[in-house]
Image (cartoon, rainbow, N blue to C red; front, side):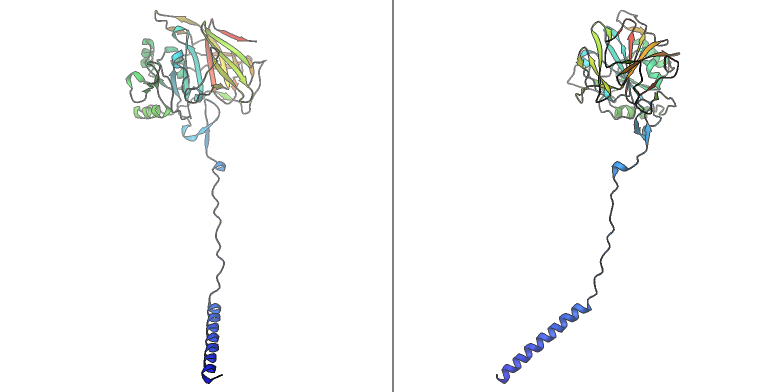
Length: 347
């Protein structure tokens, strides 16, 4: 090998040795990386968050705390053929069904703790419906009224919202013919309520509720009919899965306009009231301040009860036959006020 070749080999070996040492030096002088500790972030399970609730005094079920002690909304809802199906009845905590003119009934629906986007059709008030609305200290919502009802509203100083004089709280559904097309919502009613400065709270209690489902009763009753007038019959049929009664009107399911679903009722109270025609229009006088016998129906059973109402503003007292206070199951309640000629039919 020539001297130049030997020199080249020596340079290559020397360079490799220097590079290797430098590489090892870099590796050895580097700070060892310590493992980074990352905390585990646990998202709260919304289903397990304990959100404060209040008991709905109309139904005995839970409702948002914001509604605690709030006065209910008492809305007049039509039941003439052209008004069916109605909107919102399934979400009412309590519903009264009472005769109006022409042998057809009308509803007084009480709402609390529910957001209902459509309620109606809303129709005119009658004096005897005021007597039931005042039992709940309710804000009375109607679209017009009979002459005597207007007098009573003023004399009794009832907080009321009347569609005749209000084009904000109500709207007309153009798919239906007037006067069967006036609607409202809980949101609109509450806004008008606040604007007019109506009192918010009430101290009344309405019902005594069972803490657990009760099947007490003297008689099994899963299917029955109520005859209000010659051309108007209500039927209830018990659904074991829902543990509630499905409503029928003149043989057809009573459904909701918005959902298309049948109306189901947990508790049904039946009583009779002395009823008579008082004018050429066919308006009625119904004796609400009275006492008598009735029936409480729930969970497939029926039991005899008594009722007594001592004044227009006083609450109806319902008792079992032994005089103890009526205790009902949690859920919605329909109160069927039949005329003295009405029929309660069952097998």
